[in-house]
Length: 123
Image (tube, rainbow, N blue to C red):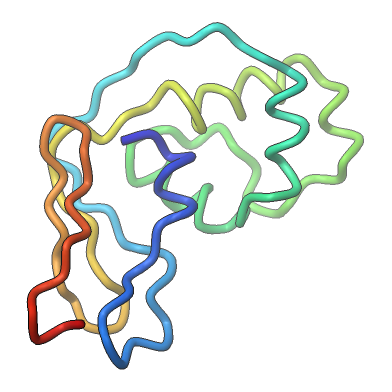
């Protein structure tokens, strides 16, 4: 699971009001090189929640992103785009779990696929 995907997932358990961001419990992390696409990155930048992306990337062992949301002018920097690209698209949670911040419910991640299915009593 890429951190791009993680940034868009939340817990939809009945009664949960704060299901984002899901905490990552990593058992296996892999890196898969992907060709960089600056246009895609520039378009995604404004759509992402920055703080959760930074926290997730640090949990996954990558601490190269700035703590605070950078100014849009940083998108003209090849160095920043490479780091942003790496965090967003090349770091994968292969095995582990995503944890609801409100309930502590764990959603397993196996072979890079998060299982967000709810139990009958959670719907």
